[in-house]
Image (cartoon, rainbow, N blue to C red):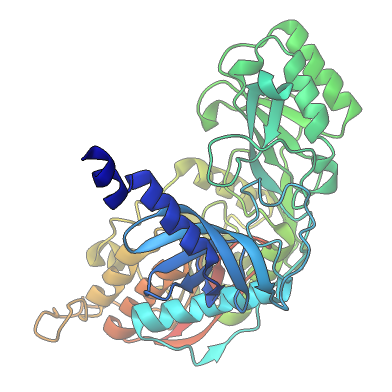
Amino acid sequence: MSRRHSRANPRPDAVASAAASAAEQEWLGIESLDLDARGVAHRQDGKVVFVAGALPGELVRVRVTRSKPKWEQAEVLQWARTASTRVAPRCEHFGVCGGCSMQHVDVRAQIAFKQRTLEDDLRHLAQLRPQTMLRPLAGPDWGYRQRARLTVRLVPKKGGVLVGFHERGSSYVADMRSCQVLPPAVSALLLPLRALIGSLSCPDRLPQIELAAGDGEPVLVLRNLQPLTEQDLQRLRDFAAEHPVQWWLQPGGPHTAAPLDPHGALPAYELPEFGLRMPFRPTDFTQVNHQVNRALVSRALRLLQPARDERVADWFCGLGNFTLPLATRAGFVLGVEGSETLLARAADNARACGLAQRVAFEASNLFEIDAQALAARGRFDKWVVDPPREGALALCKALATALGRGGDSAEQAEAPLPGFVAPSRIVYVSCNPATLARDAGVLVHQAGYQLRAAGVVNMFPHTSHVESIAVFEA
């Protein structure tokens, strides 16, 4: 009886194996890319398949690596047709390292994908189309990454210490010997850093090295979970003497970071068009791609068109990346940011650049701002908004409410705040097209602005990260 039953009802693992084998025989046409740069296909039964490393237009057979009722993740077993946009990855660690997911895509196609992502989000999430699509901003494709956080891990099975980015979809550290997106001088340090960390007294208590490369020698911030010995410190000094780097140690949170050599200079980046030099602490937030950032600041100011008799608000101002250039063009600029640490650095830079009389800085939680708090700051002719990935929803809603248009319907709208004057133009810089689209919907459909223009900024080549800029007019 048991044998007949067994033949009539195969074991579950045998059924799964047969199903997997059948799935591997099906050829899939890749239709598009998702936001993780995976190819998207549909099986004959309609099930969605996300295929790592596949590109639109390709015909592939795949091996399923994860299966759910409505979707699967897979990797390519065989190509019957490859896309014209496919190129050979430059990095030897591509496919293992999780740092760059689009090296196999021609750079022009990468930018087109990001532009399409922005347009799709605006259309689907906000029912908007910009009146003008701006030409994409781009810079160097390789060696551009001025900031990075490298994980350090002692892995005896792999011969000692590893220094690099995480493997794709894993907490493991990739066995990296070079990195094509880091500055060449920093990439060349990956192997020497492995040897250095391995020679210290506590290699298992040094979890990360943060890179902050300004326009001078790079700074390496070593996170040390226990104090280093004098011999350790001397080895760091010897390394810095041999290689053009400056060491900082970070025993606790970011505020504890301090230079090993107390006479070392802060890193800095320059905005030559505005005659500005911006020193920063290596643990401060700055853009990773200084060349593209210069082009972005220039474009933002050209789009905003500040005048000498105008007051401008820079919301989420950070270190003053837009505030200080604006102060060279406008009459007065208010920079608002939640971090008092960043504001202190921005104020220092304003004084050093001779702009202290033209700017002011204010610490405020912009994720909780309301219409009354917005109006209390006075009139501003124009705005720059540069939020983190979460976007600026509270700020946009506060603007709509101050104008008496904050409700979802005419019945819910309140009276406009007495004396409130809305900015005539807003330039919104975004690192997340979905939250930009959401906020654009508030600015247009509630606050009454028009979306004049939008475009992408290729701040992170070879990744699916989409940076963008949009212009709104009253």
